[in-house]
Length: 106
Image (cartoon, rainbow, N blue to C red; front, side, top):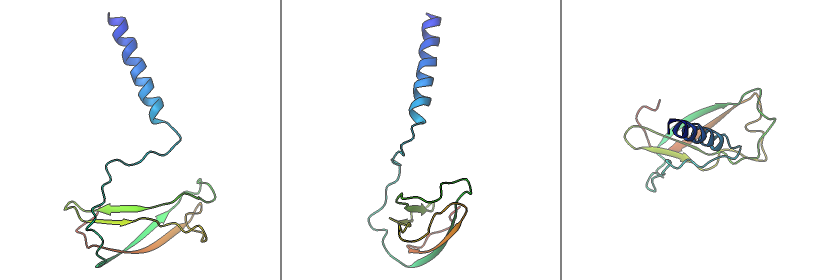
């Protein structure tokens, strides 16, 4: 009986680890954008630095979401611009974003 339980535990651990290492991106199920968070009353400067070991460029659609502990959310549905050179390897991109005011964001 102990052998069967140990085998089942090892099998489940391997199966979960294998399923988590999928190369396909998974949706963030916990992300829920509030529909009333569209007011543009504050500005934020966001700098994103890509790794020098990243691919040369990306065709992915890149969005950004952040918020504070009080439920205030800022959401930008698309930061990337396929016609520009954003998100190239070993670069820093700066974005001026407008959205609802938030308290401290860490």
